[in-house]
Length: 74
Image (cartoon, rainbow, N blue to C red; front, side):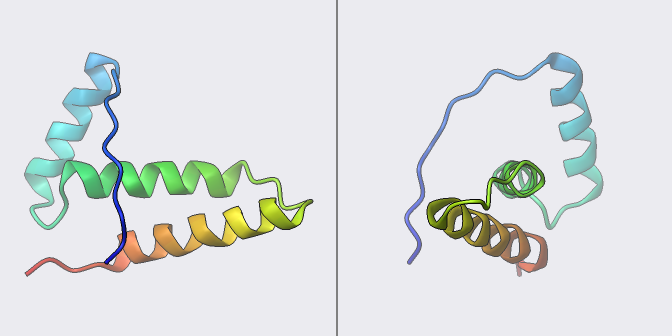
């Protein structure tokens, strides 16, 4: 089982309202899934693959992003 770490973050109210609206129309997504997808996509778009450690982190972020996008909740 993959370990998870809880975070507490403040976001702008407008972003929270958009998130609530999205979740109301996409019942197979939840807040944790959206935030995991968003954070991993951000890391992919702002990668630093110039080092072995950077390359490893990039591949880890890519794996999390794809798993998050294609996970199906029943």
